[in-house]
Length: 359
Image (cartoon, rainbow, N blue to C red; front, side, top):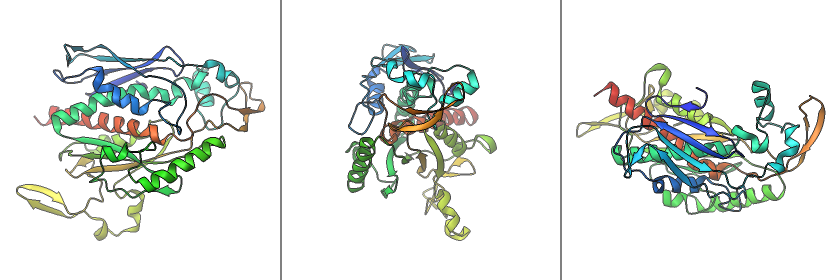
């Protein structure tokens, strides 16, 4: 099922960028969880376009409507369907892309796979598809928060070469949401914003890194071998539009350390095990160890740029294309709630799997 994700907490997303709307069906949500549109809307507001000068100017309210799975404000344990109407679609801005492929975009590969594609806005390859993920992630975050005491958050750590050093143990949502780029370091954030604005004015784009944090995950979540917790997190993150890299804990930087330097030493206090460092990023052997889980996701510069580029058309003839339409000069500020959503979806699925395995 190419459009479904998860095992016991399973979602299926649907819809295209310029179709009637975008939605998600959640199957496996526990019953009796208080849930209304008010629980979902704040996350969609963080993801929606038009929220600041450094994101796509497309104007969408992205109002969530719960169609099924709740009664009197509580979940029933039956499938939850959530729908968001598309209100500001402008397919006429994409007419040239009906016959020409954008470089580094999914235009060509969708055509190669299916022999047909929804060219307005990129169809299902558009980041607008993530509305369903973020809506489902809002539900997952509520389950994790209210039933397990787990906090999930993410922030922009780097834009191109501008990097911020943030302590994953202490960073807060208030700090993250204090500026439009969603970087908790105000000095680095100001530089990032200036760079993104410069790229937008030049008709260009820029990428960077989002870091995610999950605090309060108990030891024991994750499955041995193929469904390791970090493997499922990696798959979740690399399924996001424009994502190109994933590393957890010390990540690639760990190669510069020896085993003695890298090992997280175990200690015990009041009948509980803890580690004196956390270079493992909270996961060992594919299973959570009780420490804070943290990892990074690299996002490439957005493929659609407002400059003329060489490409080919649907007849495989060489040509040029200068894109029009409304696009993000940098995906990172809106990727933050997407990364949080996918993190929560992985964790809540493993929470239910752990409960089913070890009652």
